[in-house]
Length: 311
Image (cartoon, rainbow, N blue to C red; front, side, top):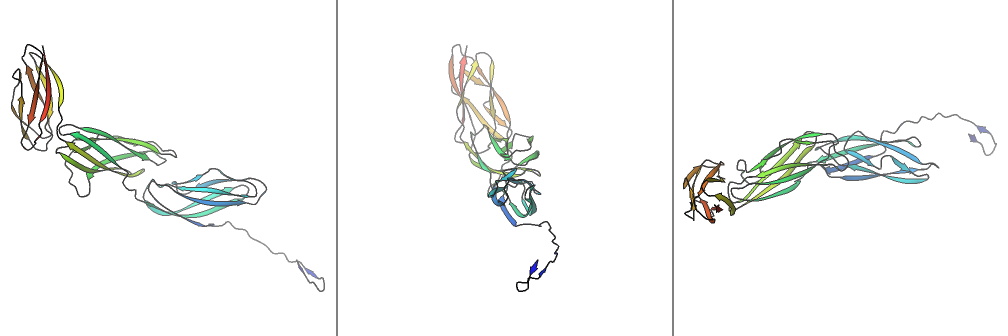
């Protein structure tokens, strides 16, 4: 309505209005490494005298909302947390939509970047030469759907990996769909050293549905440690288990410091990584002890097995 202040004449004009849905109220940028969280906040004003309730949706599964559903009290503002925790590496665009019966639809554009995850953790193992150690590596499966993982052991940067030094014992690595806190998945790693000192390798656990996990494996091999006592009844052979830990066939010398104990072979060549039984016979008539020593060239510390002969 238009009114002339001098004459008092009025003019009424009808003007049509067209209301269209907004394409996007804002662009939200998200950037995080895989399995790490980034949180952004959206502030919504409610000018009404009644509570407004929103249902929140996203076209990208790794964007969650807290709380869900989202409520804003009358004549106040509310803050919605947008939680970004990517599973797979990549980048792209997504749309999130907040829908309220009271206030309508609030659309937002999202530009996201999911960067490769760094090293997950370091797994330490320690064992004497000739023995084995097992540790369990646990990783957090974060995908909402189930996944089957494959494992591989690779040489760590700047190192050379000896065959079968680190072995993945868990052959069936599966994870169920994870909840908000994720699901821990165990993987057993066996350390079988072939030389004294430190060995390093990279463990890679991967799935097209769950992403890639990397762990540094660090194994410490110390000199052989004494073992036993091994009970050896008189008159019959008792086997002492021994393994050639080296990657080449090696000749070992076998000695016992008590003549009441005997072995069939004082020198024995054993194939690489092969375990054998060394038969020991006790011929004494009273209980006594002895030391079985197995040595080879190039290794200053021998393997020592304490024996306990019994009648």
